[in-house]
Length: 245
Image (tube, rainbow, N blue to C red):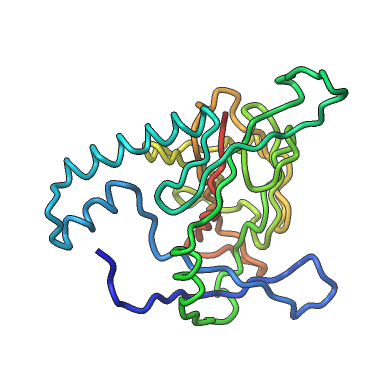
């Protein structure tokens, strides 16, 4: 199933606003497309595999559920592109301390397999220069948990840092949206839930009824540093998957 094609990515430069130097930049890989399991199955079928799409999806789902079951019971599991094991957050006081769900939590630790690490190291990189739009979300802090680039808490606050993020304009889609990774549903954050709306800092309140699941955050704006707004809105899709427990 593996191909001999050379892997390559494009990196764009973004302003590093945290330092005093005006020419400091950091690189961000340009995401060419977003794929889910169905997309991978279709690619596999297109490469003339002997298995049908239905068989591949059923096999993948069965293995995924088995892996989840074993990991949740304390096993260390190699599955797909990573090694999975459970870790514990929180401090225990005393030798006979008990588990307190208000203090302690189980987290899933994931380590990429060697094949993935080696493939990424061998990928060629083209640096395309400074991003044309300059619009970027650099980090997201969930105020309730204090975690960065990991989760959202329904009814809690979120702080975004970045560049040229200010929400402006009347074009279709302008604003902040949460995109469900399970079904693609787009949930718009109401403007009255946006508490701070600056080019480098935005804060907003997560909908209290947001269903559990995994989400990506998208920001669309016509903001410009010049007097007039952009004629066409620009959109930035944050790299990280955000979990709602």
